[in-house]
Amino acid sequence: MTRSLARGLLIGALLLASIPSWQAQAQAQGPIYIVEAGDTLWGIAQRFGTDPPALAAANNIQVNSTLDVGQQLVIPGFEGVSGKLVTHDAGFGESLSSMSLRYGVGSETLVRLNRIVNPERVYVGQSLIVPQDESGALSLVDSLRQTVQPGETDTELAVRGNLNPWSLRAYNERGFRMWVVPGTVQAIPGSGTPTSAVPDSAGAIEVSPLPAVQGRTEVVRVTAAGEVGVEGNLGDYPLHFEAADAKTQVTLQGVYALAKPGMYDLTIRVTPTAERQEPFAFTQPLYVADGGYPFDPILSVPPETIDPAVTGPENEQVAKIMAPVTPEKMWQGAFQFPTGYTKSFPSRFGSRRNYNGTGYNYYHSGLDFYGGTGTKITAPAKGRVVFTGEMTVRGNLTILDHGWGVYTAYFHQSEIDVKVGDIVEPGQTIGLIGATGRVTGPHLHWEVWVGGVPVNPMEWTQQAFP
Image (cartoon, rainbow, N blue to C red; front, side):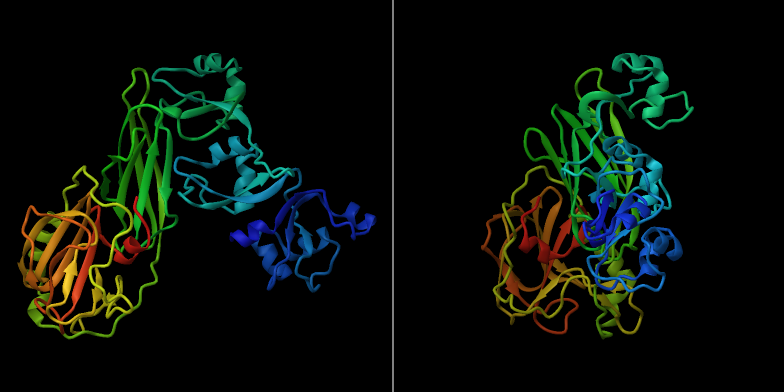
């Protein structure tokens, strides 16, 4: 379902004044779709899970009728739903059940409106159609969030909300299920607070950007009113949260550039320090989109530089250097480029590579810069030097730790002008461009690592993280 499609949907009995009264009476009340360029009756019917004859009959037109841009079409099968349909990007912790409570519409209707195949797997950032009333305000249902305590029964939970236990089950769409799971959130209607899937003790959890993309940096923020401990995982990668301020904890995690597009579980665990508050843990799919990276021509390199006996230990050594997560955030704002040659680049991050005809099993893990031997390399941000030395593939290199699991690395240098333990400032010279290691000529290969994963350095020069 596209956003433009969602913007074209209106709900209710309001029809164009130009439609004759007899036609208005014949049309069913329900979602109204506003035709856009390129739309056909058959295409619209397919999008909403109806058939063209039914769609034509609901609008008193012929199946082969020509549609005009801006024309309003009633979508049959959704009678009884009121308000305006808008898109809502599912936040972390949200489910169809929580959105059903929040917007006052049944889960079955949300499933049908969005043609959801698996209602149990709403992913973070999924764009869903939800109702909005005619005033433009979201049709929120007032309800109080109650976190189920260990050993608590339906009766005890209902007493807390002054509600009949059977009404509580029906309101939370639990059918005849008698039990409630400790740590989950149940809604008590009529209490003045919009319901959410995340308990108050866990605060607000924000994931951005959405969707996640191969080779990009994901930011997860947890903002809680009280002191909490936060940990989690994104797929196989552990998330390390650091305090951004008194109320907010943040983690940065790179998405592997060769990760297969699809769903990866994002788990967040929040442990309040206050007594009698239960820990909160939730796992939800996060969609990782294809980065759209190009395929480079086959490259010829010395065989020893792609020999696993050489590259394996070297890769492990580099990953180990950049694994620690130091709690001090040393950088401020966007990163600077490490050289002045920024109008064009010999090779960009993420391009798929085939060395010596062995197949496209590699990718370019950094951003390359032009520059003759002896061109200055400068620090893009404040950081601590954690490695200097020489490797077979990377040549002479320097690695800087900027804190919070963020590192930068500089390969193929002809000269290294810093030593381990030095604190460098933005713009400070750290070495000179060269042609050491696996190269075809002098250049700088610059990498940015986040959470143990190389990411696109360009995004770090274009925006401030976190």
